[in-house]
Length: 276
Image 1 (cartoon, rainbow, N blue to C red):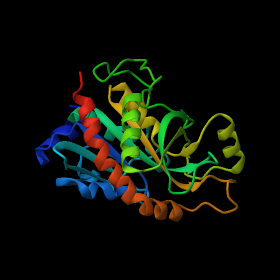
Image 2 (cartoon, rainbow, N blue to C red):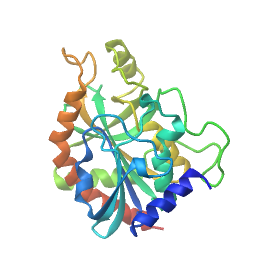
Image 3 (spheres, rainbow, N blue to C red):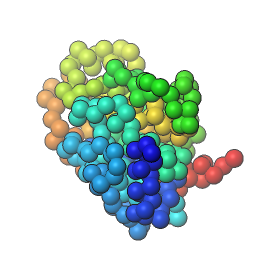
Image 4 (cartoon, one colour):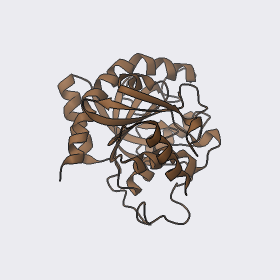
């Protein structure tokens, strides 16, 4: 029995909740998990095969619960490559949520702003990504039961989900930009020269996560919506040093806005799941 199946059975034994929507919460963005009704919290350390989060600002637990009548699975924290995880470990949570029945995922992250139009604390819808992490979670023998050998990535971030997100943000009066996310390995922050390079190749945001998760989700036929919180401006944009404490502080400051947005958008995404 594969570890993903073991994890699925373990989680299903802990809760009767069957999620159709998954959410990944990035650094300092964990507040949303507290909003779920009848929630069950399971530390990653208790789930077979699930890598433990070591990054500061990541709670390291799976939270299952309800929101407006829909089942939601929230990953409060993720496994990064820079923690020493393999590509397969970094997407293990996405694989397990897919096995549990999740058909759409909202993947959030804390990101550095490259686009000079962005401001610290802004929310940005990810329209596409550039994977510069030097690896892909699909390398190796393909599991045909999960998806095809060569999955299409021309719409890695679902256009339908993005349009819905824009509509919801407009209704709530929340400013929501859109841009391209560059994923780097980390854990050191980028140099100013690297940021100039990323801007030249079309990146608006930079971070150390998300891309591999979205590849794995697309492989499984799970629609993805990516949201970055611009927790700091990237190296060289402002005359100051980069600190993880600023990332966590900004995440805490925008938590209320992100929670309000997620509570409004997730039921709409669930409706899209049910559409023929």
